[in-house]
Image (cartoon, rainbow, N blue to C red; front, top):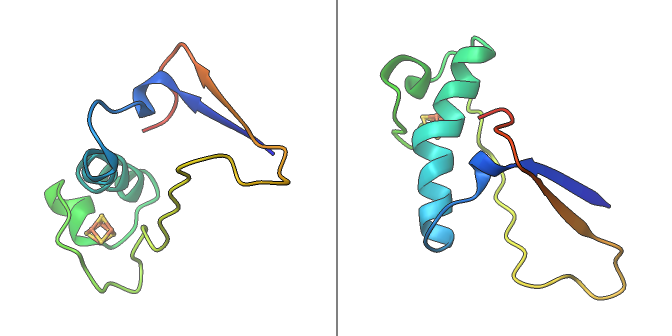
Amino acid sequence: MIVVAGRNKVVEGDDQDAIRRIKCAASPANARRLSKATPCATTGFCSDCSSPARICRATTILTRKPSLTDLHVLVVNEDMGF
Ligand code: SF4
């Protein structure tokens, strides 16, 4: 598996800072882009909604490469997506 991410996805801090970025930047922007009827699409910030259109439903944190996997993460030196 190869995960490709733009440099704008790199967050200074810890996993909570990364989740905050998802909730405060990426999810609202993607909800607007996809015309989702979520609070964040309107307000620009997360209200931990229960909307049927909720865009953030799963969180995966890899602290180390899982054993017996062929996982690579490539960070591209340009902004990609939100
Ligand atoms: S929980 Fe709802 S309001 Fe918060 S980021 Fe996800 S979709 Fe947007």
